[in-house]
Image (cartoon, rainbow, N blue to C red; front, side, top):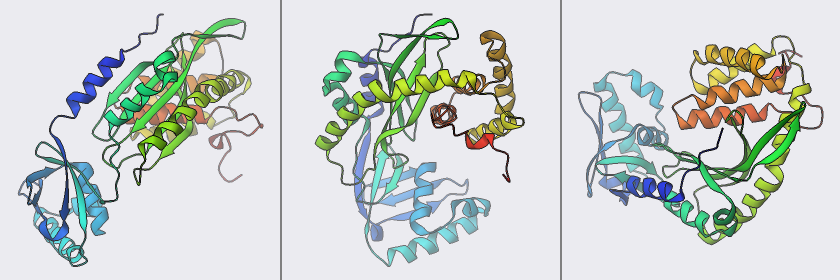
Length: 339
């Protein structure tokens, strides 16, 4: 099965289209008002116009005001208005400014002015300027959500290994994530792509920087060194751990605990059924039996079928976190509670 890579131009075009109608405004809290309509829709009024408010920005507003959003949403609309008005006026008495990140007529983020915008186009421009990327890596998966960007870059030249007597092709690469709305850091992880099944395993973060006092030159330098380290060192270690997982048997009850935790990460109870199905399918196709390899393969395979990029990322990283650490330590979910 050939691996289908994306052209960098396709990623650039998607980001350019997403950038349309985006704008930033620094607004004094005293010049800002918040309203909730009869249908529960939020509106932000400021000198630059009237905007609707995204769910992400609603949560950020409540954090800034010290008002639990979960409580507010349980209130009838009239009480929501009263709460929002009271806590906003209280916060306005302290003074200060906010950064409104908008797109068209929507406030997509409500942030502190100390937030340093490092947008997706900035990340892509830096990646294209790094010789290691332009000469060696190609985009495999790309997704834009309201919260963040997800981009995996792989070396198209496969690395061949022998697992359990079978020749296997692997692709080493990196997984990048960035948020323009304060949801996540700009971050890079190593990743491993199995040629045979298409499963993607994402390592722990190799490089990360919060969006405060960002220096783009520093980001480029640190990304450049982290990219090479991730591809040449971290990704091969993930491959070694995946191979070692073939010899790790699953203790009684561990599979169910892992499935339950994965479903909690995804926020989908029904995911447990998909995981059980993929687990049995992996046992049959690979002949790997009741092993950790079967388990992580099932999680990675289930993750690839989910529509939401945030959930796919979280589950792929969770699957990788279960792999052997090389010191004999078992995954925490393999240890029964109370021991």
